[in-house]
Length: 181
Image (cartoon, rainbow, N blue to C red; front, side, top):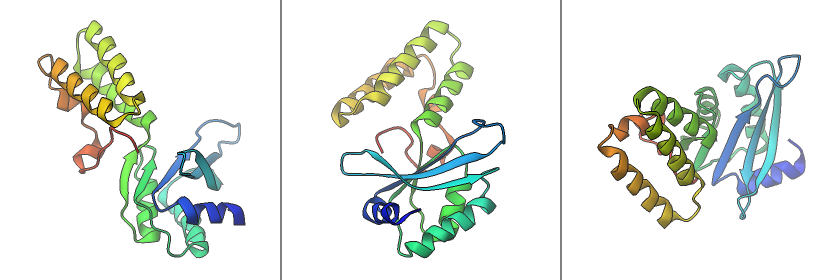
């Protein structure tokens, strides 16, 4: 993290920090982990990067500890990550902070699609559900988003137990994974 990135982290890090890693993108097996914040226009700004052979909590702890040395009072309301506990565990151990944990949209979509494929037998219903979920995920107006979710649940409640399709481990822990971050 350079000085400019540190300033951006201090300025925007209190609302949301996003952590993501690349996988299988080079011949050496290294992963690139990037921490990002967003500005007032919700544009992503990379504020710290880590190259490592894996992303376990034991690898992330020294990375986060170095960030904490530069920004000792860092607290964030939301931590958005991949579908792994390593990021959250290392964050909470380092910063003594328990932000709301959200999954990134790619992992939410992956989990919902997997549940649809397993739990919905009719292929036409699968296709319709996936298309409507895509519309829900891309809706930026909150009122319209809520209407689309209600209509989706009403439409498919009779066909299957919709709560089982929308349930992920994050929802079981009391966190919202569907919606805008």
